[in-house]
Length: 368
Image 1: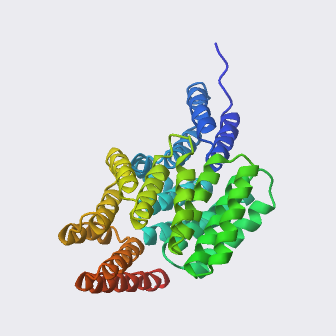
Image 2 (image 1 turned 90 degrees about the vertical axis):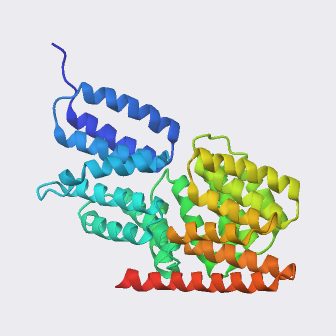
Image 3 (image 1 turned 45 degrees about the vertical axis):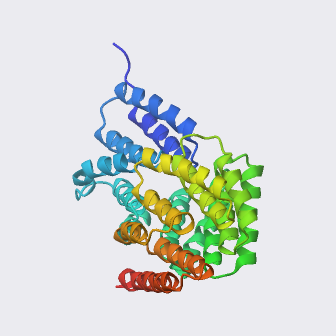
């Protein structure tokens, strides 16, 4: 009769797997997942370990950008997680990962609400690494809501934790990027550029290729915001040189931004080439948001189509992506003004202002 594996040993491996996932080490996480699944079949019976596996697996799916699968798995576990006698760590993971699912669905208010429930459980979890992760994710969510003061506060807390621990170059780099984005929103361009460059250097020195790619992508956004279009183009090209094939959403974002910058530079042939690549990838990923954004830039810079633009702006508005609506509306208005299409310019300036007002209403919803 074969000896069963100790559930305590499997539990320790689950914790190690979660740390690897947080470091975004995709290949190692995939390998460990298969090893853990085998261990579970050979483990002495313990229902709690199965619950932990499913929770961490939902986080694994988020890393792999399988957002719907992650949400479905979490939904199937809701009853167990909400039982009164369920331990605090299970409840924390459930609410924290649920918040991340809401975030990736662009429902930032529900994401923050879930994070706040998770925080009540986090206070009982004596794990500095998890506190750092929590503050990092909350900083990202608040940034998306244009709550720069809140975002910077949580990012600085995350940074303090990461600096006090070894082996967190990846998350240090990403946290610098969050701070840089907030500085960019506050029009502190020199500070933002410097922080993005620091994050790229940190990632490069630690051989964190994906973080380095993200750093270049974000630096490209910083340059595009300042109309430094040649520099922005170079950054997006560097991002697309990253070879890890499973981060398709990042490739989609970079392809879209490269196409947009090339259209602005009036490099029509190159712009159309990257527009086509981005559109094919968005179709493959069934990403309707990016299909809408791509259609909008094509309707601005290539073939003006007001009704098609408005239809696709409606897609972004329905998803409450007011930052994208504002940014693209202002881009359209400026372009049409240069072309002396003053009626269209006026219309989209107004659209941009309305979208910015929508962003401000988020503050009231968060603080209510």
